[in-house]
Amino acid sequence: MASNKRPNVLIVLADDLGFSDVGCFGGEIQTPHINRLADEGLRFTDFHTASACSPTRAMLLSGTDHHVAGIGSMAERMSPEMRSNPGYEGYLNDRVVSLPEALRDSGHYETLMAGKWHLGLTRDRSPYARGFDRSFALMGGCHNHYGFEPAYEDRNTIPRIAAVLSRMYQRDDQAVSPADLPAEFYSTDSFTEELLGYLRDRDARNETRPFFAYLPFSAPHWPLQAPPNVVDKYRGIYDDGPEVLRQKRLASLKKMGLVPKDAVASPVVSKDEDGNDTKTWDQLAPEERQVSARKMEVYAGMVDRIDYNIGRVMEYLEQKGELDDTIIMFFSDNGAEGAQFEAWPLTAGGNMDEYVAKYHDNSIDNIGARDSFVWYGSRWASASTAPGLLYKMFTSEGGIRVPFVIRYPKLIREKGGISHAFCTVMDIMPTIMDLAGVPTPGRTYNGRQVEPMAGATWVPYLTGKSKEIHDADYVTGWELFGRRAVRQGPWKAIYIPWPFGPEKWQLFNVLDDPGETNDLGEGQPEKLKEMMGLYEEYCRQNGVIEQSGSSRAQWSDEPTGSA
Ligand SMILES: *[C@@H]1O[C@H](CO)[C@@H](O)[C@H](O)[C@H]1NC(C)=O
Image (cartoon, rainbow, N blue to C red; front, side):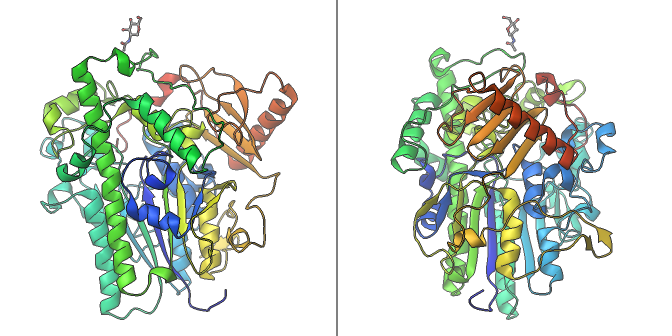
């Protein structure tokens, strides 16, 4: 490194944000601070995560595949038999060194986290136990953003929810229940305030070590909720429906040079729990459209509020003269959430609709308020992921390709650049270790055997020493809930079971065709076969347990984790 001062690191993670939601990725949502990061930094258009949140988080904090790191499948959806396999523990396991552990144990970094964890619900698997000096964590996958928890008093009625309520949050090693949250709690504001408190404390005690700060928001994950004055900015913007929005976003992405000029958006796939198509915008009654558009307005408000809070942190760092000494990364954990939760089982005999109806008021003027509980469904999600196919939970581009922005002017001198280099969330840890000047752990760490990182550092690429991040032969695989994919260079083979896909392997050139619209498999059977072979090898190397992937398999009623 040019200077021997180690950089600060700030990772800001959005939860279920689609590829084209933020302004610098073609979206109409007002995100001036994220846009500033892009204008003064670099955007990546071919950055990939897992198709769901805890697997991505495991990859981010371990630098390796989630089937190795303990989240082989989402904890909420694993059978006891699955859990007995290495890599399927349901928490960030001991076979990996976590990024904050490595940085903290080096003695060079203070490690801070405020936001959603989702890598183990117990104290011995919490951020406190896995390397964070200071933390305030939402332990599970999601929660009411205002901390409103009517089921808390009534917790025996819905075991699935009750299982995580008492340890819903944790500050350092102390459990915090929803009842302990301040009255003015709003997730995005409160996580940011917590992190700003840590930064102020550092300044108060003249801390000389740089910081590693992890700010994983739980927005814009459902339930969609945002302050009314923010939502009001988006009133009426979505009245033409999701398909119009999707095409607008695609046009804007093309104009910005983020997707090829001739890219075509994939057909929208939107199914109910029986595999029937859901109603299109044209088939909705006027009142149904109003309700649906209102949900998207609230979603936009949530994204707007993320941006506002990123601005608060940037402003603080700028005031302290530390902004240019801080590597800032912003990205999403997976594509937008497209599930139709209308009949989602919460426990035997109960479902989401009943829970919502029992405790909430979803009348149109209350949507987005603390006692509302809504999600926006797969058609809006398909606008958020434009031009990608499908959304979260799928190995198609709509589920795994997300916006990525990095700002670090000391290293990245070109401003406002766009990179089309293929890269993944497994690269983040090796990149940060490299920039931090902290050696990569070997095969043993603190007396335990550990797996090596699978990602690669971006430093040679960012400094212009290398033209690509990964060479042409590099293979990346994906598997979750029986949905499969493998990528090598421009080639991607993908298998999506019925009813969301054709339940056969398909082949795409995703550089030319990011919407995965033109299946080349029949014309190039040899190439497809080769790719399927690479997928099998990926499964063997990472200990993947293949799941059937029938549509029913995604609905599990195990009362083990958060929704
Ligand atoms: C799906 O379609 C079938 C056949 O028309 C119908 O019987 C079923 O009720 C539909 N499912 C839902 C959830 O609407």
